[in-house]
Structure formats: structure tokens, C-alpha cells
Amino acid sequence: MYNTDLPTRAELPSTGKLVRSTLVAAVVAAALLVTVVLPAEYAIDPTGAGRLLGLTEMGQIKQQLAEEAELDRVATQAAANEASPALAEPPAIASNGEAEPAQEMVQPEADQAVADATSTQEQVPKANGSASWRDEVSFTLTPGEGTEYKLTMEEGAVATFAWISEGGPINFDTHGDGNGNSISYQKGRGLPEDEGELEAAFTGNHGWFFRNRNGSDVTVVLRVSGDYGELKRML
Image (cartoon, rainbow, N blue to C red; front, side, top):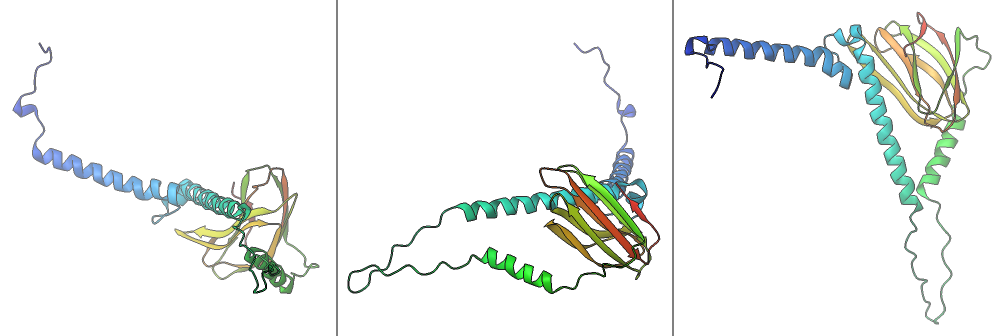
């Protein structure tokens, strides 16, 4: 019935060969996991190979996109909850049978939080507008587009920055990476501008990832000065 001859016992691989093949496959799989999968998917680069191959930045972008998607989901859910009408309580009846007047509406906690944030922002002193900036770049992001600019910095170096968006607010992530290290300094969602100082936690690349979540183009102007090597566009 079968045209193919069955292998003899001597032709079958020995137990030792099977064990060696299994160990080799396990070692190769572990190497690929550490050098390719972890950097590309989760921005985890213990060996530094992912950074050399450009996979670590890919993983950082994926993580940023996942975080932005989660923030959008939370914001959408919060907006839906606010839009749902609250169950109205029946007016209280006084002892004389007349309805008591409704109490004054309390300001929602969300509005109060926005007011507090605005007040705090007004108290923060602005950076010196007359400062002489070392580098200035301007770029336009289409809806959904993102880009990244970073400074090459030594550990402990400090750079001053200021950026502003024209056409709408923008999402950003201030972070750094280098020599197998990575750090996130600050994240913002739906902000029109930001300024301050960036101190490098380690030697490497430190800067900003911007993404436009608006329905129209947004132009961002980034100005930097201080102790750094160069300002470069990463993607």
C-alpha cells in the first residue's frame, strides 16, 4: 500500500541526538527572545543588541501607542459616563406639604480638577522668553502621525526646552534610552505646550515623542538649549 520504505532502527536518531537538538533549539529560541522579541515588542533590551538593530525604538513606539490607546479608551469611557443623565432625586416635601427648593448644583469634580490644574499652571514661572536657543525645529504632523526628537546627553547633563503646538493640543512622552537603559520622564495628553529642564539620568539619547490625535494637521515648534551634543530626529 505504501511506496515509501520505513526507516530501520539504525537510521532513526538516537536519544542523545534528540536531546542535543532540543537543547540547541531552546538556546536559539532564548537568544531570539532576548535580542529580538523583547526589544521589538516591549522595549526591553538587556543585551543592547536591540538598540544596535533599531528594535528597541520600535518597541518603545509600540508601548507608547498602547498607552495612548488605553488613555483614549479611559477618556471615552469617562465622557460616556458624564453624558449619561443622572437619576433625578424627587424634591423633598416639607412638613407643610410644599416641595422644598432644589439645592444649588455642585460643580463636578472634573471641572474642579481642571480649574485646579489651570491655577497651578499659572503659578509656574515661564521660561525666559529672551533666552538664546541653541536649536529650533518646526514640523507638521498629520492626524495620527507621530515623530521623535532626541538630544545626545551625558549623565547629569541638563538641557532647557520649550515647545508649542499650533492647530491643536498634542500627546507627548519625554523619555530616554541608551546602553541598555530606558526611562520615562513625563507623559502628557492633549497639551498645547510645555517647557522646563531635562536632566539626563544616564548617558544616551533623551527627548520627546509627539503624536497628533486631532482631526487636522498640527505644527510643533521645539526649542532647546543647554548641555547636549546634538538634536536629532529619530523617526
